[in-house]
Length: 443
Image 1 (cartoon, helix red, strand yellow):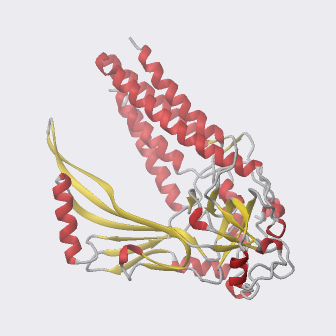
Image 2 (image 1 turned 180 degrees about the vertical axis):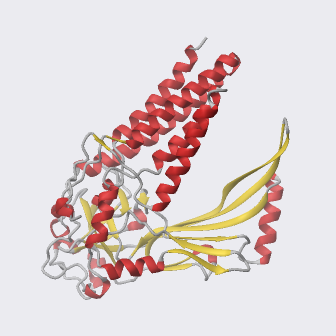
């Protein structure tokens, strides 16, 4: 499929099914759970909660309305050797068989380039702010491909709506059996719907902002709050080498922004009416994040972006994850077990380190505030100020009326292409919230 053959208007309704094996696996598991719940519900309607879980799993494994089409465009547009090289470096690796240590690089990255982008060997590092080659915008720039619009409803809407019905019916059944649980059930369902509606509202604000704000070209970027899309390139000072949790075996170079988390899979034995059972969940132990300035280059020119100033940084899918049955050292393993036991009687069974971030060459979307640079800063880089885009820089620490500063890995095409509509973000949670309130009316 070619980008010119793709309709960027999602329309009112679109059937969206998984397009890779992991998505299909989750979808099938969700289907089995859903069917089991429906069959078991003939004896007890409260078991419809199980079907709701299966339906939600099917819904979240279904992609955005344009995601599959953009995946096909990427496979055709990007050079096959480059795709094969990425595939070879992706997937699961066994780092230490005896210590049960593995690492995983996602094989599918919806935030990556969809159309070809210039490689590092073509960058002009002696003129970082000047145009690339003939000065035309990058192939994936919105002025060339346009702005996509997500479908109002997809199969995610169908799965979620049926899941909401299952939740409400199951809750109503429980209330009819024991009326004393009415306020508790209504409160929990209503609160979940309210929280999801608030989260969806802010996601919709970001989506609407992307759709409504015209994208500026760097060479003519004004002082104010422009929307910019381009490629991450290094400033004169260079970039970051990230060492995750102080372990030299877990490093990533050429980064301009990062966030890592260290988690433990803790299990504890809890008492129940029927005896005891084991409860396990992931617990975040520590994390760290940081960023440095970089050049956003859209083909027409480059502009300095102060990434650390952005309060909202969305790096998309994680870059790499390290897993192990044990901590990095024997001392840390003993300490982790002792701390988990003291804090809650837990036993640490697994460890996980996850790194997300923005690297050189990545696509980047920025909506920030451009301000003039100081003469001292220009002199430090040896700039004469003849290029308008070299004498301004982008900051993300001050929102403007109606504008929320935002930095995200990916172009506008990939960001919106994998998004859901405002209807799915907001209306469905509101239906759940109103349904929860309606449970109070059950006698």
